[in-house]
Image 1 (cartoon, rainbow, N blue to C red):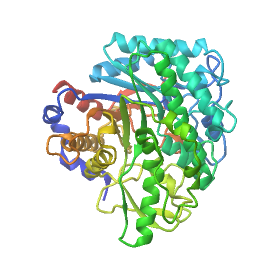
Image 2 (tube, helix red, strand yellow):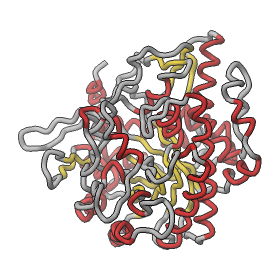
Image 3 (cartoon, rainbow, N blue to C red):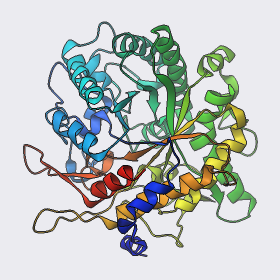
Image 4 (tube, rainbow, N blue to C red):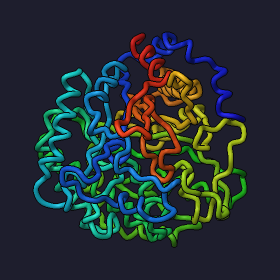
Length: 482
């Protein structure tokens, strides 16, 4: 089914209706990440990151693109904050570039790097927009030899977090330690399709543990700095189901659920790793060997839990074929390349521009799974949703992206109805929804071929002019009708 068939739902004419249906007090914002939008790769003493090196490796990025300029968020900061204000966003979620702030991943923070974020925060606060800041969104300083495979990286991350808390702790409303450690582990260390490009399969588990340990140490560092904002972590989650009732498919689904969901949420929220019993117990034996003191450090009290939702996963046993994970496909499709399992298509659902199923009906399933697993230990939730579509500008430069409007509307409705009284995920405290993304940007291995933004960016023009899409105007109406 063509992705544009979703436009038949005509949400573009129902912005007021959706505004009325959103729960009172629900925070709505939009998000970006430093490496994807900032540019200025060689400015102000910024150090290199693992992704800078990865993008220079032949064949890694579709069309050989890089993020050295990208959307030039640094050069267009005032315009971008104006876009946020005019949108009516309550919240802007961005990430600090650790290599910009601490090029050697140790010692004092870089004044030139701090100056940009100082301006960003002042402009956000001056426009009545709350700030949600992520300490690390994939762009690890290259100076950290071994990356997340090295336990010392976790300790360095904690030191960095403490310094950031001391400097910006009075102006940030919500702190995210790490963004999506599941994808970093599965794509960067298990399959090697993301930076740093290591295909270690189950030997990638130390990278997961050290990220989680770094999270725990960072929470301690932020609290020691007495930051006024809440603290949490964000991870990409997927509801998982076996493709058939065969035992092999059920085992494969259980493995993906463990690696993608529970490996990260269980230690953070429960203080323990999931039981790696069953057919894959030997491959997951590392989880039995972790230090109990580490788990106590990981299991810090949190003020919120960030949940990213892209798609459900229908899992079958058996490794995927060699074309299952090509550069430019959505990250949610990556973890299956070398695992003894693969994802099967949801042919009953349309797909987004990046080829993943558009299935908002599984969002309540995901939220209910989280409630059932973690009950009262699940903090209030910030949900992140968004989709890429092949936007086309008309002769006047306008971008009419009806499919994105329908996607966002359906997911907002699904989330609001799921947590409402009597809803399938009643009991989940949905604090806010973040739209990915404010701007078109560098989309990792897809380069600039995938467009997630509410605002179009002309990457062929050195000044990177912005054009709000119809989805931006639509969301503007939704937010004004709350």
